Image (tube, rainbow, N blue to C red; front, side):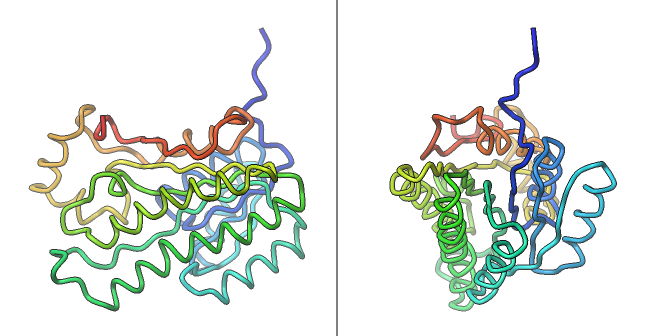
Length: 255
């Protein structure tokens, strides 16, 4: 029996935002191991370059590009660079996100509200628009939005973050429906509690962690690498008839 080529990404160009650490780094490394040339992106070039260098040292192909997706001019600039350098984009992973405030919803600060919306909604939306135009010109592609279980079941003291992640789930369905004629698929990953710096306020607090684990049937926190396999499925030919899906990878939390 021969091995399947369903997960083969040879010749594909993939862009992963928020890829300097955590879930984004795990995704970038796996896509590169499967043959994709990965554009490693986050706000600061140093972190991107570190991950890109590690991918190259492992025999993969990677390029570092800084982009703060909360800044519209940076989105425009990075896609101009992608067009010039590669002329195509096959896979977009919208993973960069922000959650600057941990408080009761009544204490939401306007600045924190605006920052969260600018990155998590506007950023994902226009990254998808720009990627979608490139994909349309080249016969199709796959967009994967990293949302959250909070988009379905709001997290305590994570009000506006939860609202934005619910918007990402609906946004995924919008792009799936409207971009299907161009051969573009769009799906969402909904991670559960994962051991990252981003989730450190939850993972490092013993009281919060104990309460959280009581609601997770698998009774543990996920490793970032456990999110990457689901993204590989959504990015590859293995999911060629899958679009508009919100895939829970949450240890059973939403079950």
